[in-house]
Length: 79
Image (cartoon, rainbow, N blue to C red):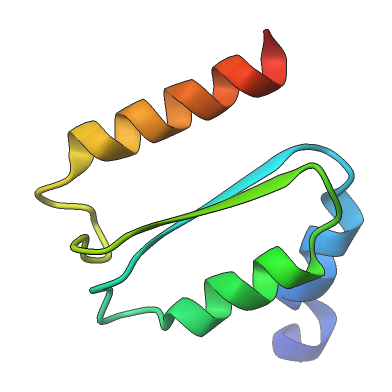
């Protein structure tokens, strides 16, 4: 029942048009990039989608890129 009551693509439509940043690692072996693409497509503007070509699910070796990306986005959206 939860799957029918709670779907991420429907929820992202409910929270937008609040700004949303979707980040994905291209080498994520847990969550397919198509899931993030579906979220991005479902979201209203303002929205941004960033993919790191080498990052895994946890951005293990790319935490500085992740931090810079999030902080930059926050600066654009809230400053």
